[in-house]
Image (cartoon, rainbow, N blue to C red):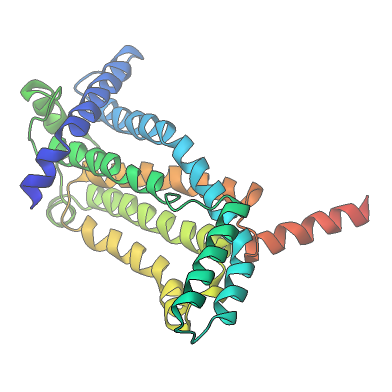
Length: 280
């Protein structure tokens, strides 16, 4: 299954590899030694910035779609209550017609989640390229020479191919640096979910069990990062740190300026606006 997925996504993976090779050239152009860990870390950072910038229109579409669904939610809730327990085919057809009309009124599309799902192949390709590079595997434009360069690059006793356990055992200071990077990636994941994602989620429409699970998601994600950090190379930990930092900043902006209507974050923003209006 993994081989089939890799084959299907190979064009995207190769495109991401081209971008990483280009960002490595940029790192060399700004004065960093092409074989240094600094050049490769900057290349990975620029790769994350490039990919996440390309995905910004999809992110904006997702925010607008979540707003549309939130605006439609009260009417849809009332509709479900009105037809609850009804098994009459004509009545069910009428309910579907009303539901369709509500969706049309608020601009809710049946394909509203499709653009967000389209991000997944690109995220997979981004992960795959960094994973292959730090595992010493050539991929697309990242030929054997570039892979050897990345593998040999070292900073503070760390290589992009270093692993947490062996590094802690052989070089404690370097291991602690790597552990701090993993902890930073996990903390960013946790804070993004707790500070920005959960407050923009209206749990009133969720079953009690699902709402409870939702509250544990931030911890599950953070623990998952720490567990995975024990087995993946340092290059991937750096990628997670950069990518999670982008997500933290991006979700913070959405939370601040465009919270989901009806959510606690939206209520906070409305209260702040009312207080500001009263003061002025």
